[in-house]
Image 1 (cartoon, helix red, strand yellow):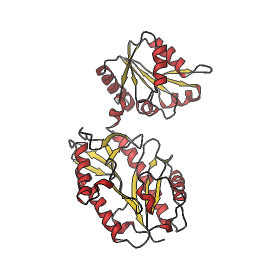
Image 2: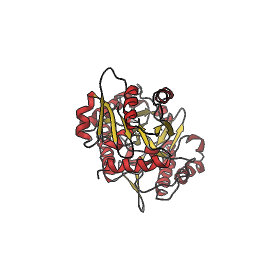
Image 3: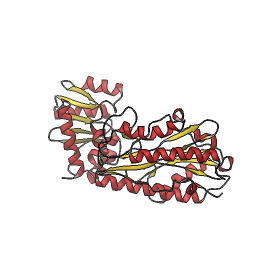
Image 4: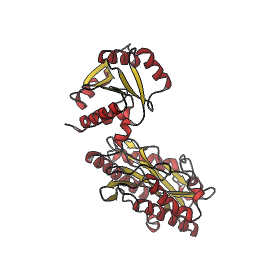
Length: 364
C-alpha cells in the first residue's frame, strides 16, 4: 500500500471517531498529503470504501499521472465547484459527512448545508493536520533537501553581501538563488532586516542598506518539490559591539536549552519554557513576545507548536523550528532559528549553517 493510501486509512479511523461516515477534504494542502496531487482547486471525498477527487478539466491529466487508482470526478464549464460537490456527494450518499471547519468559509459551509439535502455535516478541526505532524521517512528526506537548498542559497547570498545592497535586493536574490538551485522558490517571503528593523519579528524588507547598521537579520526558507524549511541567522557586518555580543549570547543559550529539551514525551510547553527561562533570567522576558517554534512540512507554519499553552507531548517524527528571539526597539533584534527532528532517543538538528557569533561576522 502506498503512503497516501495509508494516510487515507488513518483518516478514515479518525473520521469514524468523530461520528461521521465520510469526509470532504477542502484544504488544498491536505488534499496533497492524502493523494500526492500537486495541483490546486481540488477536493477529496473520502467514504468507507471510495476516494474521489473532485477537480476540473485543467488537471485531468495531472491527476491521472500523480494519483493512479483514485476515482476522478472532473467538472467542466459552466458547472461551479459547489454545484459539483452537490452532484458527487449526492451520488455517494453519505449520511454524516465531516467537513474541515478550518478550511471552509462560513459562506461555503452554508452553501453546502443548503445543497446537501439529507446529509448531516459534522464540523471537524485538525483531523488531517494532526496526521501531518508525524513525518515518515520520505517526508523527513524531503525536509532535509529543503534545508540544504536554503543553506546553499544563503551561503551564496552571504558571500555576495555588499554595503549598498538593500533589504529588498537580498530578499529577491534569495528567491532567485533557491530557484537556480532547483527549488520551487522561497517557502515564505524572506525577512531581511537591517539594524533597528530587526526589532520587528516579521519585518517587511525595504530600502535600508547593509551599510546602515552593523547587523542584519535574515529569516528565510526554501520549498523543494513540496516540503519546506525555515531558518534565521543574524550577521554582523562590522565590529561586534558589547550589546550585540551580550544579547546574542542570551539568545544562543536559550536556543541551545530549547533544543536540549526536545525528546519524545517532552511537552511542547516544557520545551518552550526551557528556552524562555534563559531569556527571562537575563531580564529580557518582555522582549520575547512569540512562541518558541512551530511545525514545518508541507507548510512553513503547521502543527505542532512549541508554546506555553501547548501541553501535548512531542512524538518521534515531528519536525519543529526552535527560534527564540530578543527584540529591542530602536536598536535591533536577534533571533536564531533551526529545524529540528524529534528522534526516538532525543532530537537531530537538521540545519548546519554556522551560528556562533564569531562565525556570523561578514566582511563587506
